[in-house]
Amino acid sequence: MPALPFFHRLDRYVLGQLVLALALVTTGLVALIWLTQSLRFIQIIVSHGLSPFVFVKLTALLVPSFLATILPITCFIVILFIYVRLAGDRELTIMRGLGLSDIKLARPALALAVAVTLLGYALSLGVVPWTLSVFRSYQYEIRNQIAAFLLEPGVFTPVSSNIMVYVQSRGTNGSLKGIIIEDNRDPNDPATILARTGELMTTPRGPVVVLENGSRQQIDPKTGQLDLLTFERNTLSLAQAARSGMPDDTDAAEIPLHDLFHPPATLPSGDSAKWLVEAQRRLTAPLSTLGYALIALVAALGGGFKRHGGLARIIGAVVIVTALVALGLGVNNLAARNTALLPLIWVWTLLPPCITGYLLLRQGAPRA
Image (cartoon, rainbow, N blue to C red; front, side, top):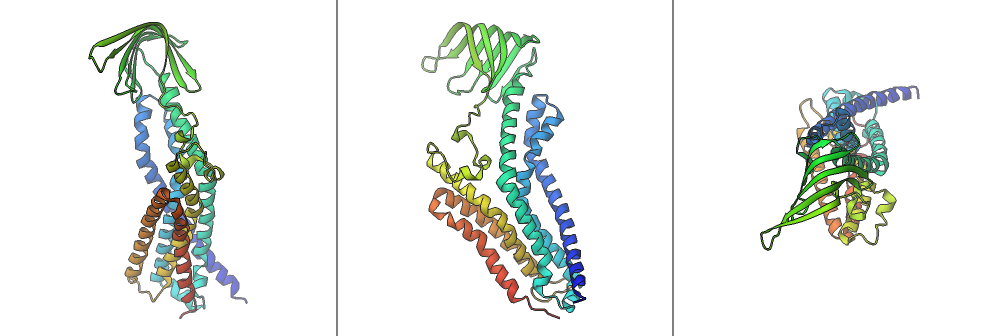
């Protein structure tokens, strides 16, 4: 039994390399995805003159969803790379010479995979839905609440994608003078609104402007003539589609797991299926980490190794994992169209680790 602590040190040695590599690879990929995805928010920030802090907060809320998505893949990459490198450096040969079977050699990788799986559940079941909900609310606030209050005198300001506002002057209390509004929210019935004075106000459903002594001008689509409607007082919403909390305004990714299994009766059948698929995806996606990790272990530990050999097994493992990722997307789409196929999501998740676990056990006897 005196050799037991030495084996424990070997586990810690391999696990340390795996954890370090996983941290570096995951951080790099998250940073890359964050950079590419954040580009679409730069226009919102720049066009409305918001601070860099707003940009950082907005994009940081997306990081947990990126992390939950890539963790199974990065875990597979790291395990495959580290074990192939250990084999190429003859370290695995030495460990086998000490009597370690493939099962014992795989212990550090399996420990890492279990930890990543638990982290994936924490992200998918709790952190990601919450951050996506906060992200959507914050994005709505920027596009509707904040943007409307950044109206600059003498400048045509795009409050949203289909509302353009011009004010001649603006008071510190929200009063406006010389107002022109181009309202294209209805593409078949655009309108130009003029008003002498007005006041900008905030409401729970977004910013509104109270117009006084103005007119609304529209072209009649049937006659082609200009229709002019004058008013003494009129209230116009400057918000985009309001986040009212109705089911069709809510993304399934933001819904708590319990609610996903009990969609509202008012929800369209197609959206109800998406909610059920999202629930199954959250329960199964973290488990894919175990399957991918076992595929990497079977490829890296199976057969004899040469310093520059084993390329076919490496390519084969990459191809299998790529096919499983694509198959998972296809299964989710099929289940969304026909909920009777929901069990396929579990089959896709559990079958690979069962097969690869069996293969690893078959080759698990100590080898010189």
